Picture 1 (cartoon, rainbow, N blue to C red):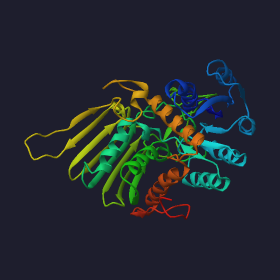
Picture 2: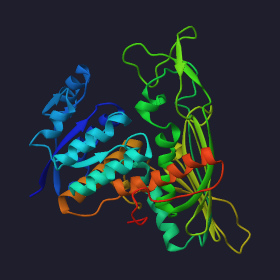
Picture 3: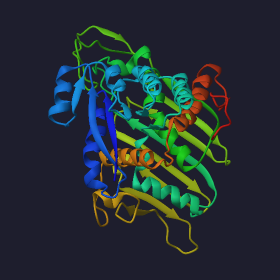
Picture 4: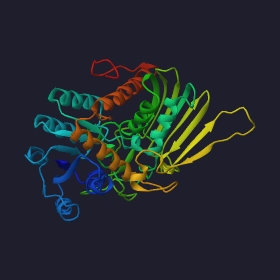
Amino acid sequence: MNRRIGVAVLGLGWMGEGHSRSMLRIPSLFPNRSFDPVLVVCADTEEARRERAVRDFGFERAVADWREAIASDDVDVVWVTAPNMLHLPMIEAACAAGKAVFSEKPIGGKPEHTVAAYEMAKAAGVRTGVGYNYLWAPLVMHARNLIASGELGEITHYRGRFVSMYGSDKLGLLTWRFILDQAGYGVTSDILSHSVSLAQYLIGDITDVVGMRNTTIPQRPLPTGAASHYGRGRPEDPKGAVENEDFASMLCNFENGATGTFEVSRTLVGPESQNAFEIYGTKGALAWNLEKMNELQYYRLTDDISSGYTTIYGGDRFPFHGVFSPGQANPIGLEDLVAIEDYSFLEALATDGTFSPSFREAVDVVNVQQALINSWDSKTWETVTDLTGENRGN
């Protein structure tokens, strides 16, 4: 008999909706699961969202106070999908209540918040997960398998980038993402975290870094009332200062001897959601881009006259892909990755299995972020150290 797992979702914004939909889809996608997810309670400050949680998503109830949701006896696991600076108090309450907790990245807005969350969960002995959802792309998993099998030979260089246009409009409103005490850092928390998590998943630990930052659009129109991140002001509207970085770049060395470059921006015009990597080895190379999520480029060094990259299309021969779409080159989408990670987390809870990425892996990411932040001031190379004081990789 499947284990019942009662779920609370804290915040029904974009990611809250995505995780809620995945809970609804899991029974039909994974018939051999060991658990049954139950949407027990949604917490949101907006009445319209609370009404929608019950009406459209089938939550048993919705509340305005997230503390009430966490304290509910029929809740086993808490999904934290609220704005960054609410992550830590929500996680603290979930840990105190002995509830498993899955948090969207970056877990707070600053490295110290992620470390605090990890230490709380470790002390409480609760299971954790973090939403680096791109790790669950079937072709990313295949890339990791190719690297581990030695198909690329010795890895010599990694290029990671996440370049998005979500902040490229100068009239885009000054929402919480641009305010230091609401979002924390800018693109290094928001999207560099994804790039670094991919690199660590595929290549391994980063040992030292140096980099730079820039705030490309220093002022934005002030919002009036509730505002969407994609809302737009007028040229004559009063403006406020953007308090965190729009752009960051980083050079690094990996523990295995490879070099790396990273670049992230929310204001460049052109790439719309280019979360991408290029991996170079002595026997071959790989390239992947979220904008073409169902394609992996593979170059294999040979002795004959053939050359050039081969396109590997997604299909049911790769992990999880066939759950959503059978055959070859039939694409899957972003929310399918959310369903995969949610299923994997809940299956680990139900079977007492291991799950990664957990809060430990989130700390590994912010260890790199903190070294980069240090280099902004020192303007020199900085060593990546474990902010918990533990041995890295534990």
